[in-house]
Image (cartoon, rainbow, N blue to C red; front, top):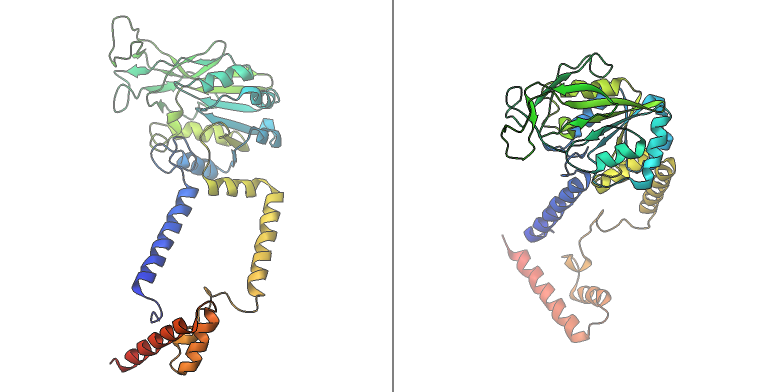
Length: 351
């Protein structure tokens, strides 16, 4: 089966196949933090899976214009630590909220979350100072636990949350949904220790407020939705309560790290009937062209070269070499012909 293929050729083809698989995998996954297509500890692929399993329709929005295609009163939009400011595009989100939509903004130390909260008309702001708890925490005081501040729609089925180097929320007129324990404090000087100038008290870590006919939920740590944190405490229960309270969840990645190339193509095909129809037509034309060629492509049906046939005479081999390389002179054709004849005769005498 491999008689017409040398080992170096097979090795090269194997290497090319491995490179192709690697490129396809790299173009369909992500290593960016909070990416829905990052399966590592710092990704949110488990969040995407959990929403799918809840029965809520999940839409990954690459552009702010996607807000115009959903029903606000049936939709919750989630924004995790945006890396870029929304600027004038925030007007679209503001209209979505005022029309009855639910906007969830999770941020810790960046400025993108506060910018978005201000642009949509919310009063809550992320403090930006690290929250620690020496008594009620996970692996270390940097993983403070939080409990429900009252009986609300999004907290009644959540026993508690665990933050991961999160901050707190300055609520304004927003209602706290979850707060830290009475033994938590803000590490104002960043020395990871409780100093005499730092006060033990409860702090809001999740708030909700009415904006127009909709609501804005602020969460002081986007890390609770990471793959490594979703199973901690009752973090996933909060996600489930957000998802099941709405028919659709819009995962807004428009101002976060760009999606992998193949994922961008897939999302485009899912969300655009024109793009899907165009791709289908191109695929049909390609298949039609392939199977209507007068001869099969060489890579589909490789035949031995005419000059390799043991039944050809010296003159026929010379004619085959000359037809393949018409630019060669007679002497060169003769030398190649003699070499082929010699190689064929040696091969024929091998046991």
